[in-house]
Amino acid sequence: MSQNIQVGVAVVIVREGRVLLGERTGAHGAGTWALPGGQMEVGESIEDCARREVLEETGLALKSIEQYGFSNDILEDEQMHCVTLYVTASCPEGEAENREPNYCKQWRWFDSKRLPEPLFQPLATLLSEKPF
Image 1 (cartoon, rainbow, N blue to C red):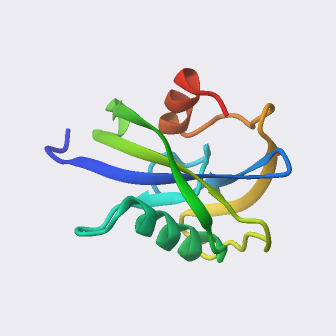
Image 2: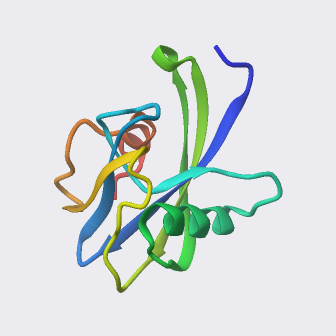
């Protein structure tokens, strides 16, 4: 297992009772559904990371970011230890574009009470403790 802990930020964007999820490809968790987000850069705030990652991945501009929770996952199959910091953010307008097709197959809005499966492990961990 890697000796490094990866710290990521994931963003819960809910619009009209639906949450934005992407189907992962290429990177760890391929074939699972995940929130937009990614690894923090050195010196970056959680909010700045959330804004940067969502803009890079979807083209959406975030508003009013608030802390939501965290997950701590040891992904044995992938030899990784990930700590993910979750935030909620509003994004009242615009449609998600797939700007990183090497990492995401598609972005879709899902009813927050009926999410697709399988979910990315860190998201599943969060939802087992703190559902949307």
